[in-house]
Amino acid sequence: MRRSVRTKTFRTFQRMSSSSTSPTWSCWACCKRQRIRHQGRDRPGSTTLVACWRIDVAVTSARVGMAAGARKRWRQPDQYDWMSGYVASRGLQPFSRILIASVVIALGVVPLVMLFSPSGPQGQAHRTAAVLMSILSFGGACTWLVGWPSRRQSMLFAIGANAGVTLACLIAGTPATGLLACVTFAPIAGYVGLYHSGRLLAATLVNAVVTTIIAGVRIAATGDTAMAVGHVLGVLIAVLAVPFGSQLLLHLLSLDARMSNTDPLTGLRNRRGYDQSALKLIAAADGPQSQWLAVILVDLDGFKQINDTHGHGYGDAVLVAVADNLRRASAMNSVVARLGGEEFLVAELIEPEEAEGAAERFRAAVATAPGEVTASVGVASIPLTDIGATAHTELVGAADAAMYEAKRAGGNQIRWSQMSAITNSTTATNGNAP
Image 1 (cartoon, one colour):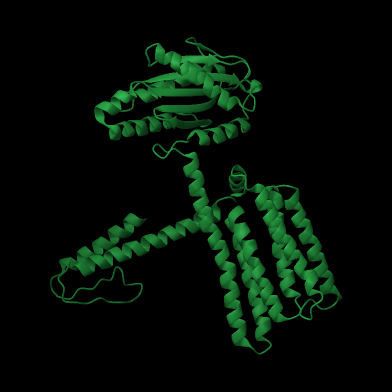
Image 2 (cartoon, one colour):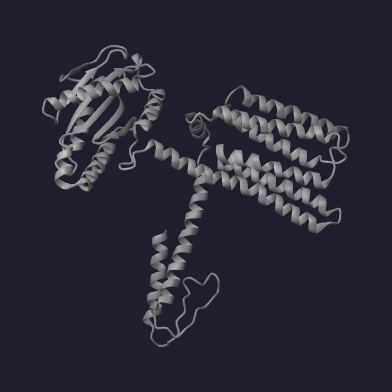
């Protein structure tokens, strides 16, 4: 789309530049939306014209990018599992649970305190509703104190918080108190923006805006329209700024997570990323019980000589090419990683008779990379029925031993290390797969 906009704009300039009947030119491409005509005595193709063209392309590209980002955020599922895993991996779940529970308890105390204020809820029904909101708030806080909630529990928590704050704003004794209570939507929107989908965030913001406007109308009905407008704008700025800030934080956290799990040179997973992805691969295995988990370690032969002969820049290019080839050669249910240096690692779910073909597939993938590079390949495998909690790491050690057997045999070869149970010893062989 951006290319078509740029091409259309450039052709517009070509048509204008081809006309020499008038010394006056008009840059309609960047100004037709704003109905502004730039006129001058400059010859066609001047720097002003080029600047206008560049501004138009930049603005259009920015609009397209923002629209695409909004559509992507709207369509994508929530990031609850990912965000929960991120918090857990950094040991922040206990702190987060206590923080959220403390905030919810504090919010639950407010309706009880307001029962003793002339600005609080009036009438038996409103006062009963205030007590009920406090009880539900304390129940929500207990959910966080007991443990990390599930996605469903978290969504119910967010929906309940929205409903509770809306009710608190509407039953407030005075319009000003109701409008002040609308500020409570800010932390709710921030939480939803971090953990849940764009749809739930949009629903939260719409609810907050409508409730705030209703509270503002109640203030305006008392005769002070200026105060109503000013307070509504102030509350909306606070409520809308927090979720947008949480979206920025989410973007930064996702970058940090990707960088901490990704090899910066090849884009493959690093050892940390391999461990996490391999565990997910094992947990998600839904094939027949006859399947095996195969870990294939690929080490490039003579890579130091490539670096010494052609330089490290060329060596890095070879590593990137090898990584791309391994990625393309891998199956859908596999994990490809770079351990560092010239070592690559693949974890794949296979049938027993497929192990030899899988190893050969990766050895051949390395051979097609530039630089006439070859690889020593070590394979360790274990039946899914015998797999243990540390299988993915134990298999790496077994595959590493098999790889060194291949390297000592001259390189560009494959060796297997069969494991019938993860606690058994491993044996490197040059025979067929298990």
